[in-house]
Image (cartoon, rainbow, N blue to C red; front, side):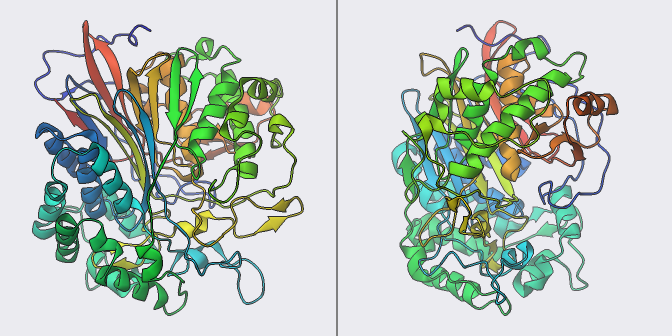
Length: 600
């Protein structure tokens, strides 16, 4: 396949990363949230991003300090996995609302020959039952009554996963990869505008005395933008992990401290034990790969639903000529949004019915292959008409009997995404999370603990039978994280690495970038900067402040229940491009967050 279309906006040479200005839409207004419809990591502003070009290697991450750490590792000869470790450690410090060593992650890796999926998803305590989130009245508790405290904390998986990936694909010493984060934690970093805004709007973090004393002054005010924030406790933890490996986290005093924090919450204690933490294992799984037109798109398998759902959407849309529906003069095409939203409804319906941790619950029929079968998806696509179906029903791949209930877990995120390519041709797409903004709001030794157990269904069954994503001891909750690698079909030639935070909306965010680049001929920055849109098998959601009323009216005429909501994606992406006749890497970062791209 020929390289993606050249862009002619790069001026001058490329000594280091060259910014390439791609003008995006007008900044969005600061608008109120509609409860339950969007990520709790709300908008803190919109700033156009230029897009960046480099020849040899590149890293895209959600904070400039984290991007810088990954860049230094790549410059020192490190691999994409080496750089991902450095980026994650810095994100733990500078973007604590989104991810960290107290959470989990999924990492997709290509070495130019093989694609592997590394699963660092959290697990439920062995004492957990399907009544974990029920109250004394026998009913499921309010969502935030479950989130805040110890009850929703799962065994963190990110460090074991990164250690596993480093054993196979690392080049630089493990200990060296922690140096940037240790230095920043010890010497301090400037509080960013986004972190300040998140702390200012946060309602629960002050309830934890440890977190309150770190993130707020004595008057209870968040540290101002530019304040030099130091975290010597985290520096000590990272030094221990750097010297002694992930065992320093999973075994011994730190694991005991996590157990004590979880069990000792005064109002909402949890069940997690040091024994659960010590028993955690990261896993290598087969990625979900499927062909889309001239490309092969690879994503994460269960317990993430992201890879399957994105592939289903693409398979459904492959039956339509999406290329003819590209945006014109910056305006989205209503028919394109209609088709994309209907494909999303169908994919999300199957996701809610069938997808969960396959170590516990098998997928229907022949597994992911059944859900991605071209004939099955063509039949699903045939359900799309000129009018919206409103709410789609799950399909029956290969006549799978309907014996499972429908999951309704909200999956609200705080999450971050990292895309990296190195000089050896290795690529990483990694999405990392602590679930809600600031996770469980419980801080231990300088880092926050996740609340990922609320990604399970609170109910265990409905009239159709047991819910696949119900809580079980040792089980991993279903996720929508969708780290994605795209290749030329029939080869291992990398075209793109991308992914996003955004809870259950991640699937639509990633799908938008794939359609934008592969069908509409946009570069990755232009695709990221497009307004967000889609359906999660409910209302058709359009990004508030980014689309005009005419588009909404056109969709309403097609029967869509349109909701204008805040949709704060955090997309990162790197794609192969021909720029002025030279093959280069071109990177994009979401204008809705503070990330950048850097490379040489």
